Length: 197
Image (tube, rainbow, N blue to C red; front, side, top):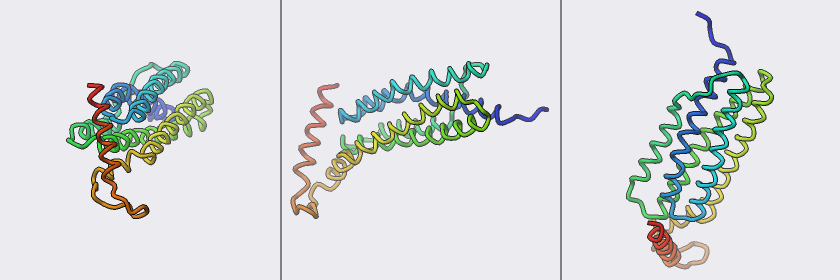
């Protein structure tokens, strides 16, 4: 029996990430629908469009290497998606749900960033320069999506959730109660959610 080579492992990993991206095209709309923050919903919707482009790039790479375009079930991303579904089934307040959706999105991004980093290194080592360039474009988009989620979390989503969790605590800096801001934010998010449903 002939042993596989790095090229075989590269094709195998491409098919794995191809399947991961296709799974995400089905999962991202659900994350977007569950988000109460308009900015978070838009971030998921924008990344969905990018993800469709990632699928096309992998198809282009496989075709360019004279390989069949097909996926190999990605257990890793399937597990991350299942965790995200479980979070959406929880009875969290709106602020906490948004914070959890950010966390779910970032788990997927980090998984993909690791996969694309490996694929780029292997493509470079084997002289698959065109493939490496296409993979690098996708990796940069995954990193940008991860940064966007971090900005949203640090820009208010996590604090709103924390304020909702501890509404009667005083802010150590200002000495004011946190409850009024959290209550207003919660009311606004609930109103937005009511309008969408």
